[in-house]
Image (cartoon, rainbow, N blue to C red; front, side, top):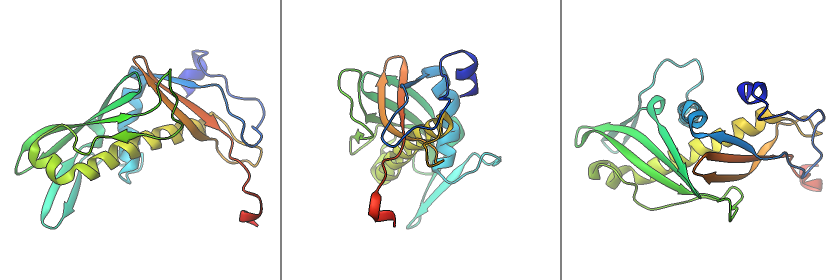
Length: 189
């Protein structure tokens, strides 16, 4: 966000946002996404920024899969965010699982909804066994990225970080729209 501010792409609000209000969309071009996604993937896997460990081992029922969040790559097209996740296991060796998430497009926004196919592309031994976990990692990475950008962009009038209300993908990258939370009224009292 600092670079976006310096380049005049993002101008932070001077005042906190009232409930339900939003900032203008924040554009993240593909080169910026490629810098931010590995950190978001690591956070989605429970790593902190100071972690020097890049490889994460998933283990369940005697099966194991190595995932390297530091090498996760991303590209975008109209309405689609494609994650390439490096994976490794004894049955397949090294490979890449590709997960496409359909999100909003410039012509049709979708808020924070995303859809993925049931079976990602990649080594059969990996995607047959770990499809749900890989899709969850891709979605968790996207949500972590949008939360991080929105939270850095500003605060609401209650002092809380802004939250993402919409993600749109196009050939140039992502647009994230930060929102101020709506008050929940008596539910919180």
